[in-house]
Image: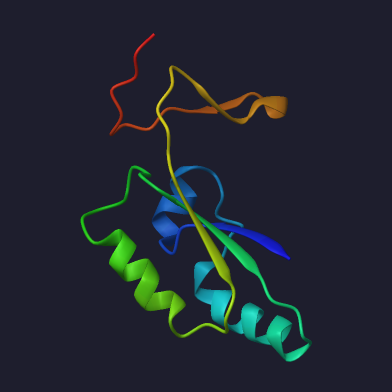
Length: 101
């Protein structure tokens, strides 16, 4: 099962209007799935505005307490406007990116 967790930092998720993702509940959810023979592909994005030096190490450290799975890591890419939820008109421009038109 593919789980788009995106960040282990609740403040990052809130900053992109994804506070419905609950990283503090990740371990319990993944354990419940693993107990039923379901293993997750977990997806993370690095480069969000709240990310600081060491976010990759902190993410790995957090994941080490989780059941086995397949993590996927992606950088947040810069473009003039990133359609986070284009269907509802929400656009996200990361502050740490210098976007070129």
